[in-house]
Amino acid sequence: MKNRIVVDMDNTEQSAVLFKALASPVRLEMLKSLIDKPANISELAERFSLPLSSAALHVRVLEEAGLIFIQEKRGIRGSQKICAIFFEDLYLNLAPLRNNQIVTRDILFRMPLGNYFDCSVSPPCGIAGSKGPIGIDDASSTFYNPARTHAQLIWFTSGYLEYRFGTMNIQNKNIRALIFSFEVCSEAAGYNNDWPSDITVWVNGKELYRFRSAGDFGGRRGLYSPPWWSENSSQYGELHHLEINESGSYGDGIKCSDLNLETLHIAQKDFISFKIGVKEDAEYVGGINIFGEHFGNYNQNIEMVAKLER
Image (cartoon, rainbow, N blue to C red):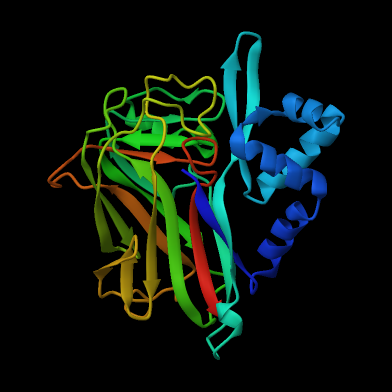
């Protein structure tokens, strides 16, 4: 699904990467050509009379700016990398610079999927990396395998994973909001697009958000699912957000709890606990798949953004 890219002029690092990508006439022409038809790097090199190495460099700059995505596609002579447009439009946000609004800066924390602090899971369960399976499927002992740090997809039926985000960079700061984002879906045998599951998120030990995943999504490959992964298995999830601010907690834009930054004691300890899973007494115990940056539809692991007042 294509999305809107919001360029926040207050975020100079993000703006610089994007404007650099758009500053090249060749890259602009590449974007225009990809609107109508995705292409691999060799086709782009031929289309614009470029050496293959130069075309690959332009593609990398566009991908890093979030303007295109690259998906590996199997062919008769092996796999090839297909480039396609990732956005619908660009929006230049000047609002923070006007009307005496509070100006914030973002600190992004990226949590590798396998770096959980604690876990308790029930089978069917398993872990997969970008190059192959990790441990033994349906054995909870796999979740203590040291190779779990390479996880890119984790699934289980009920239970939880707990992650701990260090607060060294945000302690004693004026935090305006804390935003978590993660890609998840239900977990069925193979995949089942109609397989509901009630997924719960806890922060600092408090239950904040419970939402219903509609299914274990498959039928087409995830944009980042590796070539070795079976097409008959879970492919992608939906990206969810949980925001905690001064007025409460908001799951995917809807208020889900009155617990706020103060009552959750955000950044008052050495870590912020983020726990996600499926409760055994949920109405729909349909399991959970959690996707990393090299699986699913979104090039990210579990992320936390702290918005700090300047």
